Image 1 (tube, rainbow, N blue to C red):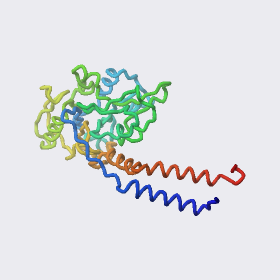
Image 2: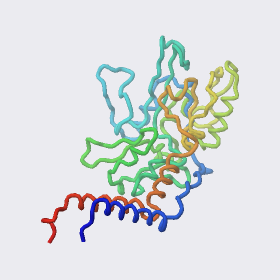
Image 3: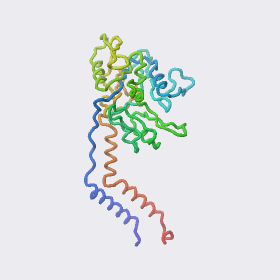
Image 4: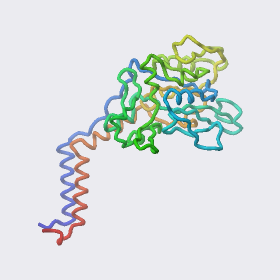
Length: 321
């Protein structure tokens, strides 16, 4: 029986409605937010304490077996320029105008560390189809298992911070990102970047304690003498100095559903290269879309309908038996 193009489209649309209405009478609802694990560990980075010495970068490379990297032969301080498969932690510089005043948006400058934020509800683990990226069930650190990775790089697309990097120059490439020195934590130690930071700008500890410390700093008056822990929030070692000015925002507390890396600064985080994110995680939204599309196998049906239509358009009578 001959079927016209109009008749075919009607049939396809009718079948789609039946699939949507009959097999999928309800739209999938967003899943509830993922809470921060009670024993989650993290890092508090305070840009106002950072002096740009890059000791954290050197320690990161040494304790994670990463090679030196040079991306611009003319650069001295800004070398490498950005994160890569060889650099998973970097200190970057924001400058404006004369660049004379530290931690000032106008005519000032600020340092900012960029590395994996270890999100509470990571988009990378949600997007990974084989579970190569996963959260540690106790510490919440986002870890990578190269043995199951298929190299699809969905994690790179999903990450709102553009963190995971792919080893393009390797015959057996892997995804590379900060894993918060999980190999050191397994031995009772803590991340090298915090261990070698001379000013306490990078501080390791349980996230709930880091949040308390961050809120204490925000409550200080500018110029007020105070103390700042070194290396770990519970180390007992401190440095004393006047309290700097802070923006009233703990980046990572709620941004993107929350993260285990928290940041303080006195320059807007958007100027420091961090994205504006809502309080819901990207994973909760993307999974809602996936569930809606696959509810009742609606997406596979639409794809199949499209393929059938293409075959129909390109089939003539002489192709028929």
